[in-house]
Structure formats: structure tokens, C-alpha cells
Amino acid sequence: MSASRSKPAEPVTGTLEPISCRDTAALALTVVRDGVITGEGPTTRGRVHFSRELDAFDAAWCARILTASAVEDQPVSRAEAEALFEINDAATERSDDGRFDDLLAKAVVHHAASHSGLPVPPRTVALSAETAIESWAPTRAAGVDAEVLRWIASQMRGKPRPNRTLMALVATIVGAAALPLVHLPNVFDIGM
Image 1 (cartoon, rainbow, N blue to C red):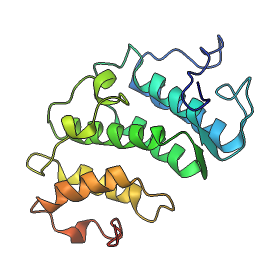
Image 2 (cartoon, one colour):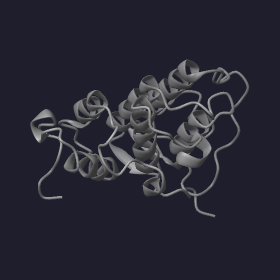
Image 3 (cartoon, rainbow, N blue to C red):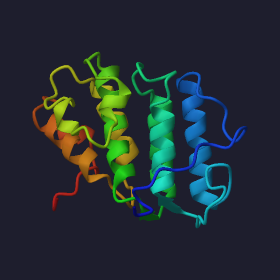
Image 4 (cartoon, rainbow, N blue to C red):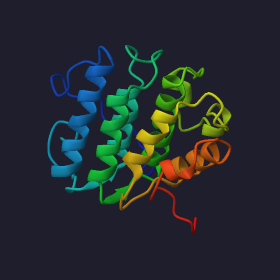
């Protein structure tokens, strides 16, 4: 089994607070972010981890935090999605076989759809690597809140590492919307 496919060790007692709500999940994600930035901390303990690198273990930490039983049936919160964007920004090197990008896109769309009042599956289904995002994500703008689309655009604007999956989904939704692209400047790479 390759390192990128192996599961991370169970957390050492006391390294992260138990996930009891979406706020503690967001806080735990900031611990992962700090580990990505410094290469040190409770989420990197017991393994070699370079600063600014996101590896399969980091992506697995994020997935476990986001699918903890206390939050499994709740939609992804804005704070959790923002923490994921911060992790994305912090990681200049990747060795996770794309798992984090997949998780980021699914979590952001889960938040956007639920914030807009659209039905979303439980996190364990929606965020699973085995679940195609197209199987549950909105494919048109009907019902998607324009404010949440602007928020996503602001998070993606000017980023050195764009999330292509998320960009494609937002472009599909916006393409079907009455929302003019002027609301989403500098988000989409025309050469996509």
C-alpha cells in the first residue's frame, strides 16, 4: 500500500479536542492548517512533514474532522469551509493524490447548497472520495444564493492554486444563472 493511500494513525489522546460541533471542527481544521504551515504539531507527530506541504495524512485529518459523528448530519459551515480555503492557501506542495482538492470542492459546495436551502446528503456521503460530486451538487443556479456564490468567488480570487473542480462547478452554476459574471471578476481562467 502506498503512503498516499494509507490511513493516518488514530489521533494521540489530547492532541485535538474532540469534535462536538461545527465550531470545534473548524478549530480542529486550523490545527491541521498550522501543521501544514510549520510541518510541526499534533497532526504531524510521528512522521516526516515538511512545512507548506499537504500530504495524504493531512487530507485524511481534514476528512475525519469533517465527518466526525457529532457533525455528520449537519451541513458544512462557513467557518469550516474558510478553514479549508486557508489550508489550501498554506499548502504550496502537494503529495495527496488530489484528495484535498476533492474534499475542498465537495465541502464548499455542500456549504453553498445547504446555505441556499437546497437538500444535501450527510457529510459521510457527500465528502466521500467514492462519491462523485456531480451526483448531489446543484447543476444550475435555481435556488443557489447569490451571496454564497460571491463568497466563493472572493475565496478563489487571485489564488495561486485554483481548485479546478470547484471552478468548473461554479462556472456551470453561474453559466445557467441570471447572475452576471461581473459579480465574479477574476475568478475564472478563460483558458480552462
